[in-house]
Image 1 (spheres, helix red, strand yellow):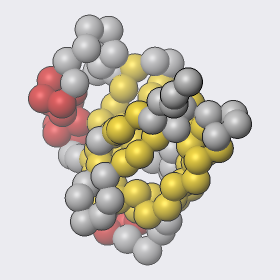
Image 2 (tube, helix red, strand yellow; image 1 turned 45 degrees about the horizontal axis):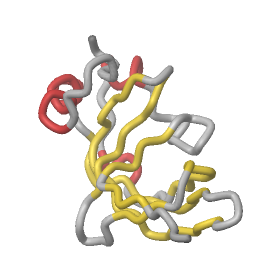
Image 3 (cartoon, one colour; image 1 turned 180 degrees about the horizontal axis):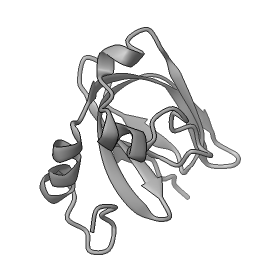
Amino acid sequence: MGSTIEINDTLQLTKEQGFPAELKIEKHIENPFKAEDFADRIFEFRNKKDIRVYKIPPVRNFLAESINGKWIYWGLCHIVEITSGYENKITSGKFKIIYINTPEEMKTAFKIQDMRPGMNYFT
């Protein structure tokens, strides 16, 4: 008897789960995006495995993209809505982008925030 709820400070998504399609790492390296480019947008994510709880605004969550199991720390977000699917043990929701790392910040963010071997997109 019991349940598992995962507490996260990072919203890590694949494109299939709802990571913003317009955020492409190749474009960002050539011509960096800014949070202002997405100021009035609310993005949706879906079907994150497990029941998850995120920090509530005004506290930030890290925003990361997973590409083939490698993580890119894109910046910061506010989670504005969460829906938990208890039968299937999934979490869906909505978020706003509040800060986008520069390409240089992205390359160093993993070393500061994560450091798990084999997970860094840039190595």
